[in-house]
Length: 370
Image 1: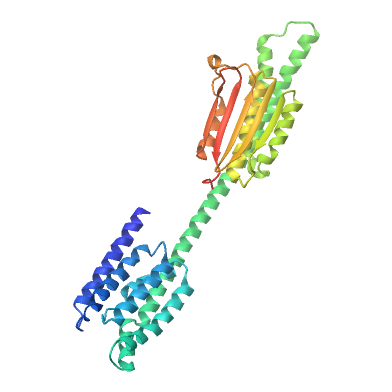
Image 2: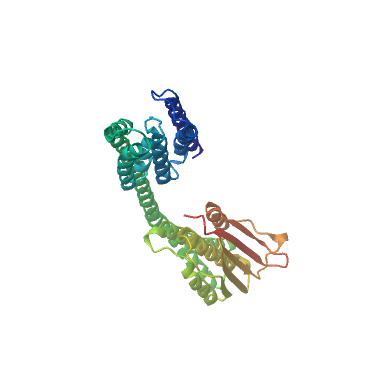
């Protein structure tokens, strides 16, 4: 962006210098004071106005046209180069109708201004204006702007098509991985878990002591099955409607159904939340409640969602056994949560409280997220 501004200023200064040089070397004598000072100022202003041609093409078109009419009227026979640049910029920005109307006005007003403010016949005025503002140059400037605009649009369309193709291939690969994982791992883990369950049941039925290794195998199989299901759900996420803040009450109800005294509080005005923030907020609450159920040994949990100007704040607290002295090692769930929040430009704090229990506090921006 900065490089484009530098280029714009270089073009503006170059055109202004060219206009002033042409004014100095003109065949006609300069107008008398104070008209000469006005003419020089209009020549410089017309060229320097081109520095804003990308940001305000219509305004630059009007300014350069007015400057051209002004310095021609006071006696400077200088081609309206700055105005041609402005026509090119306006057409490139997609303002073709404005450029056509402005050019028609220029073609009409230029000979009239010369006729009214200079001594001479109507024929001479029209001849001079024809030399100054050739219709062919106007058409060439507009055509150049339109050609570049079309080229940029085709380039943008090609880039968007490439991105969509890459996203589609990534989705297909993700679904392929999900199917492979399901086919190759789910069955094997299920077999291991069932066999371990049967062994534990038979040992208990015979009154034998169940080996710790067998219990560990059974528990590991259950945990692996749960983790695999969660992974498959994430991989297949695009096949189903995305979860968001509207589904958070369902998470809290399921937590209560499992025996956890969970509460939900929603504060602030519920405005439009970007889709990425909506999904991430759901995942934060989901992962937090899952961790509480698995690891916290907690009886109560509170979920608070606060809609603030420019941000969405999520806080999940529990009364579990975690303390700063026995801080748990962050698992995959917390790491994934932190990655989601960081990708959105937000902040996350997940740590035990001094008085006991664990807190997850996330702040997600809602104003600058696409």
